[in-house]
Image 1 (cartoon, rainbow, N blue to C red):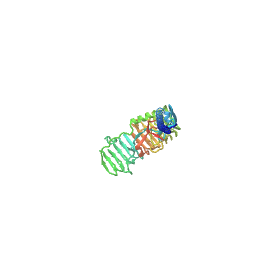
Image 2 (cartoon, helix red, strand yellow; image 1 turned 30 degrees about the vertical axis):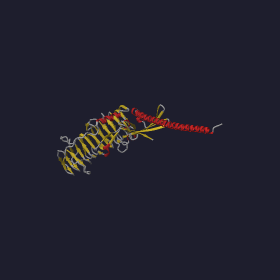
Image 3 (cartoon, rainbow, N blue to C red; image 1 turned 90 degrees about the vertical axis):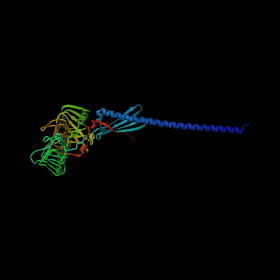
Image 4 (cartoon, rainbow, N blue to C red; image 1 turned 45 degrees about the vertical axis):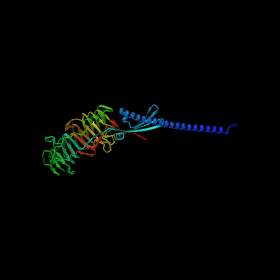
Length: 437
């Protein structure tokens, strides 16, 4: 006969066993789901990290290619893929806009994506042109109806060459360093200074000048000179070096020669050509309304002639608001007959023609500019610059300067903070590195 109490106890035990097993299974299931979820999350983190690292590898690969391959530097835009094991990245290198470009790299590891963006820019050399004209010990000779719309700083004298009663016009102030007692090396003569602006003049001696503001003398005399603010004594003004160092010039020459080098007796341009950086071992002649669009620094070892309506200007995409330089070494720079020199067209962009030629002969100067409408900067390290007959320049700096009748320098204040870049061939640097999206 069955015992009901035993049956009830057996059922209870069975029920409890099932309940315990269910709890154990539930706990085990929870542990499994939790562990599986953590493994999945961990796997995603690993894959995401792998996607990030392949994206970084893509950036570094692009930077390496840009630093080693000039054709990549000059390219307007590149897209390619890089594969490492099971991961891939898509790298996009933009074209150059305003002296900078963007590199993006999107890493993909089994549909896990990470994206990095880098700003890559041309390094710049800051040159401060604080005066309409800055002159070294060679000094400046002005002629009647010549004009400087701005200030002058000179380590040598500033003297008018012309008939009595003529004047050279300077709308701003004049400073002549007074470290020499040699006549002419510390003298201003035949100038009309700051007539409307009331600017001052600092010099050792003065002869036949009118000054809108005060005239400061550091030991010499004033002969036939007037000053609206009076004449007073002052301490001597120390000499100033020219603003561009030889090291900067060497850097620009290195950048120019980092790409293709052309060798020839004379490179002629009679149409529109775009190139740079470039070293030309020989002479360069741009003529007959030909146009040279500079995409980087150009270094010419021989004479450079720009004539007959020819134009030299900076490429807007390569330079943007930055400035560029054309360097001439052993030869001369000759600019005449309607030639035009321009920056990129953006505010703050200027073209500078720089000569390291040492000629100081008036009939054969290092830089000769005539009959032009220009917005360029002219610079010599040890040579003479001559501006002749209806020439207009933005700024002029040199060892010695002659400004002939009807030549005008129109200084622009933005030149104080001029940034010179060599364009695509220069020294590039990463200015930002960040993950996006």
